[in-house]
Amino acid sequence: MKFMKLGSKPDSFQADGDNIRYVATELATDIVINIGDVKFNLHKFPLLSKSEHLQKLVASTSDDGDEILIQEIPGGPAAFEICAKFCYGMTVTLNAYNVVAARCAAEYLEMYESVEKGNLVCKIDIFLNSSIFRSWKDSIIVLQTTKSLLPWAEELKLVSHCLDSIASKACMDTTKVEWSYTYNRKKLPSENGKDPLWNGVRRPQVVPKDWWVEDLCELQIDLYKRVITTIKTKGRVSSDLIGEALIAYALRRLPGFSKGIAQSGDITRYRSLAETIVGLLPTEKGSVPCGFMLRLLRAAILLECEETERNELMRRISQQLDEVTVADLLIQSSTRETTMYSVDIVQGLVEKFVAYEQNAKNALLVDSDFQDNRSPKFASDASKVLVAKLVEGYLAEIARDPNLPLSKFVDLANTVSSFGRASHDGLYRAIDMYLKEHPGISKSERKRICRLMDCRKLSADACMHAVQNERLPLRVVVQVLFFEQIRQATLGVHNSTEEQPGSIRALLPGGSHGSSRSTTNTEEDWDAVPTAEDVKALKGELAALRLGSSGSDGNLNDGAKNDAEKVAAGKLKGLVMSKIFSKLWSNKERNGEISSSDTSGSATAEETKSTPSRSRRHSVSLSEHP
Image: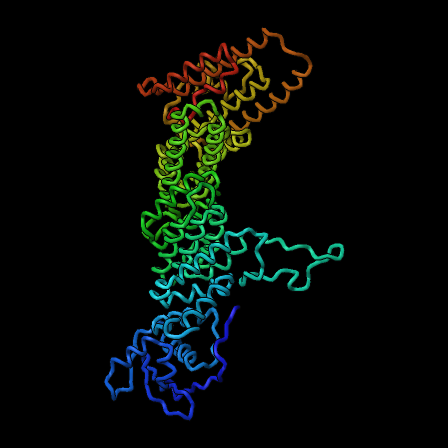
């Protein structure tokens, strides 16, 4: 820390109790100056020789008056005592902690060069400019002391000089930074004497770009805001580094922020702090990690921050939603909500993401220069897939909440239904978890939630699980088994219709005449939960399909099939698909419930007779038919 000594005489100021100060000399004092509740018994000559303001006060009093009252001097009795000692020529030590108070008091007392050469105002200004503002540590300390000396420190431009000094040092080239500037860091190995030697020479110290971040966390939020704003104005610090500084400050200043909770305390102060941090966030996308903004949003909700700040955070988060993890989205709901997590917040984030992606797509179409550039589209598609998987994982987590309404689950899933992804395993897991935790939902609700899933996009493992899942409606189990049969068929299973496993033939019109299901299945039968016998039978058929597939692989290796065999196999798969579809939705045709998507599904089935390779892409999915 820098310091400056003024004067050479011994300090002869003494105290008589807490409220009286006097100078121990042979000469009797001739003036009493009251500063607040403290009385100073002093001599007129040394004071009036350097203070123009005291000259005016003495001149304005009566001839026999020797007592002056001063109430508003900045810095109070302590600052006045420094100025009085300087007037007496006594030794005074100025440092970062008292220099601002002394400067403001000297300004109040008008201790200028016009009164006497080498007066206090001039000496303090020299000390500030030559030492204090050149020191990183002292500049921060001085800035902290200005808060209690407003508006004097502001009017004398001491605050602005501190801000510029700190910002300039934070923006300087790290190769010119001396580690002695910092004071809140851990010691380097070289300072502890533990730095290893390399060829007898110590390794040069590399100063990181964020060397100043921790030091600024000592500032209160109002001063911190001004420092960060000044740094951003200079334009020499990256937005990523600004974001890192804000993260460090939030972790230091917001209780429980690292855990995403707000601990008890001064809620009003913490609310103001959170709102200020939101306002300081860099505008550049990606400059602040999305996980940090979500924790900040969580704090803003708990602290009941203004709607403006919350909406701004949600807008920023939605633009980077593909960077989020499921754990980040698990925002605890308020006491007014019945659900465990704030599903509405996540719903809003996903909707804003969809709108942002659509606006970005429209902007590319408008700009003809970018119409032929496909990389933004690919990036957008990749983001959508990531967000879809994120939502699936989130749905699996909130499905465990017994108070979660089905409507919220379905609405959130539908928000990303248009996002193409190769697998629906994550969605199936979420649906199964919801059915497990909510066994009392009705058949129509069970049917509604299962519509979200496309059975064609389930992996082999998911299909195996679904066929054995007693919580799924029979219609879904049959569809899973059917699409698995199609998948196996494309891998080389080319059995005739008579050679299909028993329960597959039972699904075909005119199939197994001993099965009542082939002729008398109703809509209620298909929506019912399968019995243990149904699950066992379907599990056996799935196993039979896999055995058939493995057996056929060996036959395929013995020799290539001729073109006639391939055409016959393709026609067979088309026939099986057409018959299965006609059975699954025959009741809906009778009831007049076939939608346009149902009709397209039947037409697609016919296409498969001539184009087997398209059967998987155009088969009717559960999401298209109730």
